[in-house]
Length: 366
Image (tube, rainbow, N blue to C red; front, side):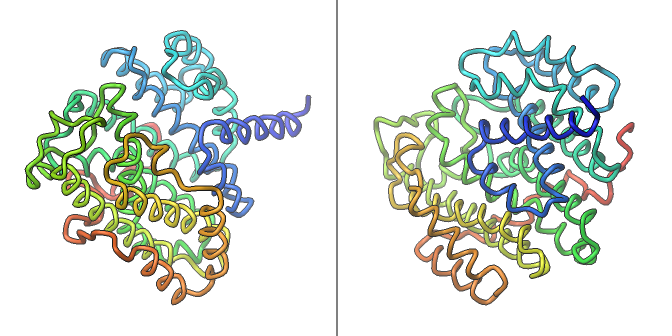
């Protein structure tokens, strides 16, 4: 097979893997312009491998440290991908999705694409994966069955698993378009908050599935303010005080999604595909929060799943408004009506201890 044929084949494999591991990203990534589909797909799959290491309940913290480090070496190009996959794949349990089993098994295909990307694209993805791995390992020591200690800790965790992705996407967008790069300074201030809004929505949505595997990412201090102790959290016994704390957390996520909208509106109107990629994700998150807010006694993510019909309507309305910032703002205001809002707790989404991407070395060997 020629190099061109091999690249096309591997790209097809990545598209199929994306369909298997993420319904939402499989929906939004194809909206991107051709020059971004390949690097963003590859970036997502690399982050998903990191996430698979974090989520595997049968791995000890020491084993996770080893595999995070080994995957970093794979990205550096100093360790063969097959060696990493051959060591990790047999240790994945039945709790890990079959699609993630296959993703890990096909690490070499993912890395083949990675090394075909431009220097700027590889550097952005490399920095993201390394930062994500370091942060996830740190929070393996802090996470427990009863939640994180503070909202500040939750903010920091959300940065490492999602805010850093917002930083990475901003770098990829700026490398793709000079017009976007001209707005980089304003976009980078909101990028991590964008990621946190989506991640907090997912944490709230997947609360009970996470609890079933012995993990809780909710902040104890925020729920304590409403008179609820997360140690007594149970899907079979709804406490109104928990519902009150959940409302406060929804308010924080709503605040971050407002920042996400502001980020998206900084994108040039001519970049229709990138706007769709961002705004579709925001719309789906908003309506997920609305369902949770109306049914705070949900017991699994299926209870608050958005229907295909509602999803289609969200995407259609967004598309109709895609070049009209006034209409997009109006749609956002109408969609979020009735949601709690905590703007003061939804800052940039980037912890003070984490430097902006521009302050970090872009050299992947450092």
